[in-house]
Length: 236
Ligand SMILES: Nc1ccn([C@@H]2O[C@H](COP(=O)(O)OP(=O)(O)OP(=O)(O)O)[C@@H](O)[C@H]2O)c(=O)n1
Ligand SMILES: C[C@](O)(CO)[C@H](O)COP(=O)(O)O
Image (cartoon, rainbow, N blue to C red; front, side, top):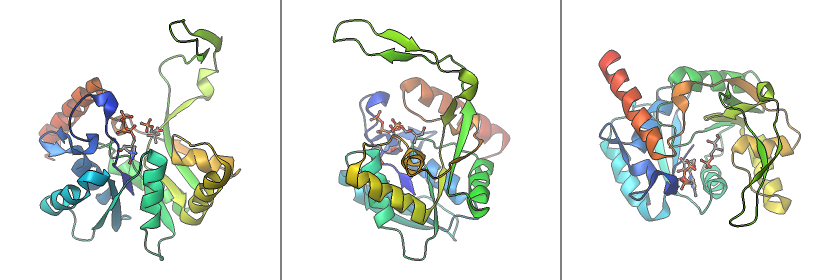
């Protein structure tokens, strides 16, 4: 499943982020192709910005994908979590495992996708690809408006990871996590975060530098450079 219904406010004004061009092709198309490159993926559910769902259907019809890949487009919600919920509701009954991948991570290598799949097939209830941090991270006490923040703690960096997507799940476990959050939970910024709260172990596997999220304008500059290098060396 590819949540793609965000506006991309941090990227600056323009079309919804998933529809903005990367190397002349919408970011969403790159993300769908990145997932479809894995032979384990037979269905891609795209969660589109509600106002652009018809446009997204047309767009995906116009761009080549492997023949074995079925694509379904559903409208998303106000938050990423609501969009993922909409995507889960659209899954066919026979699905037992799901990968959830941000449209905003268009350049994830297929080896990373396959490594997540393998870990789920090996029995993990939830799997996240992750990388160690390069910066030191501070926990802060947010000040009142106009006042500076104060540092309250410095978590031990060696124990921290920056988490990427695709995140892989046993579908029943993820559905249980969503149901629990709907009853009494605060939202989570990633899908594995919800599963953690059930007390289900979340397995960490190595992420990849090229699976970075396009969030701010400089990320788009980096994505263009990575794509140009791939096109020059790998021809895609
Ligand atoms: N209501 C939402 C919000 C986000 N997403 C998706 O979740 C992924 C990760 O979100 P992010 O990169 O934060 O995207 P935006 O919400 O678009 O970014 P911003 O906060 O800058 O607006 C993206 O693929 C985005 O399209 C979604 O499907 N539905
Ligand atoms: C799911 C995610 O990409 C994992 O790092 C991230 O939490 C999404 O956060 P965003 O604020 O919606 O970009």
